[in-house]
Amino acid sequence: MSMGGKLFKPAIVVLAIVTAGFFFWPLISPYFDRPAGDFETEMGSNRLQDGRYDQALDFFNEALQLSPNHRGALMGRALVFIQTEQYDDAIAELDYLIDFLSTESAEDDATGVATLASAYANRGIVKDRVGRYEDALADYIEALNTDDETVDGPGVIHKILYGADDLSTVRDRAQYLYEQLALPEAERLLRVPELDDQQRMYKP
Image (cartoon, rainbow, N blue to C red; front, side, top):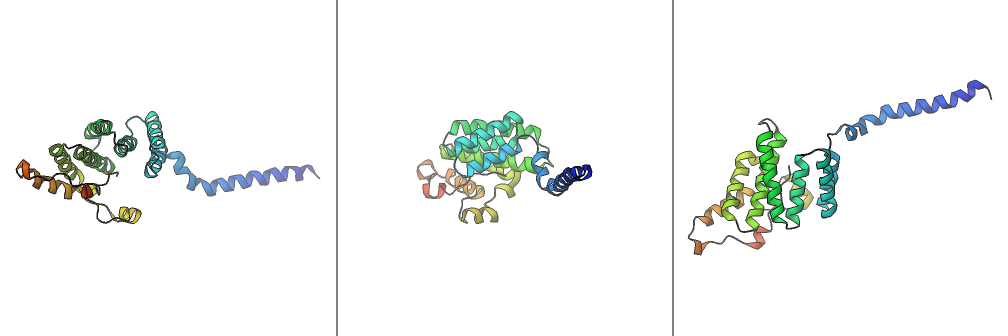
């Protein structure tokens, strides 16, 4: 075989690799261009949805090591704590997230505003569960005032994924608590387990 033939085959391989790179790069580049912590947060969210809470928490912690104050990872940690009934930790995480977003998020940051509303809603749910009803109502009102579209009921996608169209909304629960707290204490019915269990966590 001639020297030219020996050089020809490597050239074809290189050309094939370059061509493949041009074809696949638009598909894979988002995974390389993502902000620090986003990939780990997405992996944590997947584990959270599957109920693998320890693994979810590990991913969220890793995201926060790469990007301190990553709002998705902070929310993810709070949701893990809520799902595992570590309510003090959940409130502490949500307190921090709310303080951070209140000072750092601009008004035109739609994702930041939605996350802030979700944090208020989730903190309200936790306070609701531990019997701090007045505080829960205050958080529900803050959530609705911050971004009512984010927290005012499950959307179509949520209904498709979870097959539920009767979940309690922040507005529903806030209205109920407001009416009950207006009654004399002896007449209040603040916990209805079969209805309270329909509340969902919020994640923008």
